[in-house]
Image 1 (cartoon, rainbow, N blue to C red):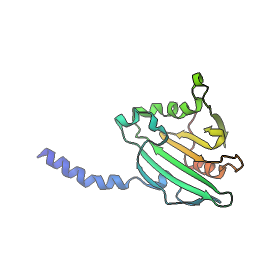
Image 2 (tube, rainbow, N blue to C red; image 1 turned 180 degrees about the vertical axis):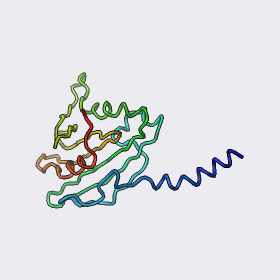
Image 3 (tube, rainbow, N blue to C red; image 1 turned 135 degrees about the vertical axis):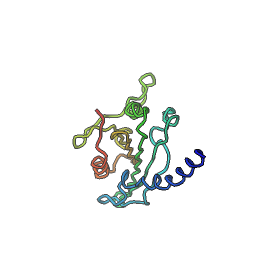
Image 4 (cartoon, helix red, strand yellow; image 1 turned 90 degrees about the horizontal axis):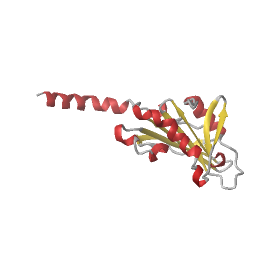
Length: 171
């Protein structure tokens, strides 16, 4: 009888839990300045930038939300991912996993990023400034764009908007 009651309680509660996740808690689902939202943002299970850290899928599920913006005046697309980690013991590794790409591999003299401060927020930048990432509590914010000729302006309007929504907790 107890098993049946628990199963009925789970079925009753599950739809409410699913609706508790709001896309707008993670991403800015509107245009930002000259950058138009390319498609409505969405969320699903996934680890985002921390995908390579195999220990994250062992003890919890992460929520990954993403969106893309496009500025027609300079033909620049910007991809955003915000990953919410479950608040488990694995969160103690978030800073390490995000800064791992920043540090690179000294033995192979691999690319290293730059720690940058924007409006009092410390963030990691990679690939000569076309990739930004930071942690905000137990969220990881990842912003990327492509500029192979290095002639397009940085999408700082978007970076600042996301820093306002998810302030950096990088020490």
